[in-house]
Picture 1 (tube, rainbow, N blue to C red):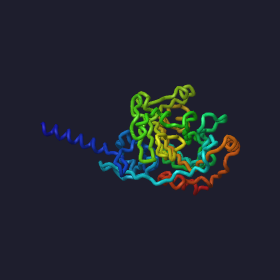
Picture 2: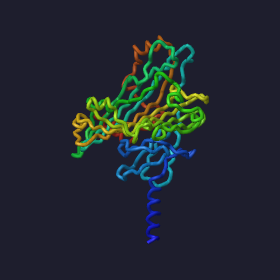
Picture 3: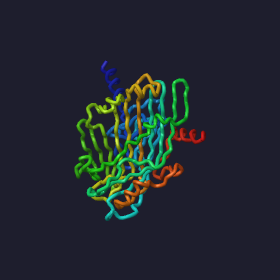
Picture 4: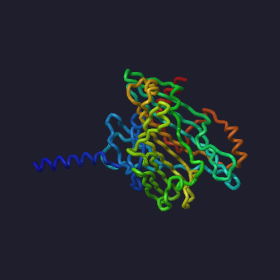
Amino acid sequence: MKRCFLFVVLWTMMSMMGYAQRLVDVETQTPLPWATITDRDGNVIGRTNQEGLIPEIDSCLFPVTFVCIGYEPLTVERLSGNDIGMELSVSELPEVLISPTGRPFLHLTGYLRVTTSVQGSPNSVTAFMESIVDFMLPIEKKTKKKGWNHPRELASKRYMRKTGADGLDSIGYDKDLAFLLSAGIYFPQKNNNIAKAFNIEAKTLDGGTVMGKYAPKVIVRRNGNSVHIFADGLADRKEHRFSPWQLKLLGFTTEFTDMHLNGLFQTDGGSEILFTDLQQLSMSVSALVRSRFARKKFGSTEPLDCKAYVELFVTGREYLTEDEAEQLRQTPPAVSEADVKAPAEAPALHPGIREIVERTEAMK
């Protein structure tokens, strides 16, 4: 009887170990927290935890791909129980064209892409958008004019795929579902210093963790002049959930269950890390939408499981005077749909998303 009990304990421990493998930096072996996991079709299905541990994944979803800003995406056919190592990607920070002296605005241009999946019952949608965007960030508090801290879309391409239990598999953009491609990225207008914005102590900027009310809130990893900032937007929320009352009043009851940021910054090696040092940024959001209108639009009898993954790659930087910034506000740069191309540092599209793009282009 004792031997049987011991066997059960050992078997349980081995099973747990199989699901407790980590995602790590292949060189340093440090865990990669809150990395995004996508299934064989490119839909977001989960993420690692703050210790880089990989959750249990249903076998029907393989092969799965691990994505983490600053690293090459990694696709695996199965989980073996051993740590999975990701390699750093090689990229260069865009050159700053003019000195900031006397120029209180930093004009950033970037390549932005958004992948959103909505799972209903029985219908689902996968949406993808890639855009050329820009930001105008004030770097001096005394400026009389304001910039814009959210992405201004200059040109974009949009794609959608709809599937259903009845065999429906169609390609076509639906304007009524444009909200699925909202980026949600913005920069703080009042504070360019990350340490102050996230309440990070100076010693933590060299590598460490800032605890939130209920969970780790910010994790900092430094490698020379490169700094990774991992942030959990729900660390201060009880049970790691957040349901905005504003959406409830509008009849769009939504419960957010995941909200993470991953930023890669290239600094001058000093003690400060600035938002204007950003090189790459990703954001992932998961939510349950219980709105009757939304469920009706999707023909779903159940709440909608929505997951979005956003990536931003900074492609240009230029300091401007107030007059130059105002002129650029009134007259945006001339960018066409043909200019919407991923920069060299952006990873290749997931095969499932690339299929949607290719099928759409073939229809034109």
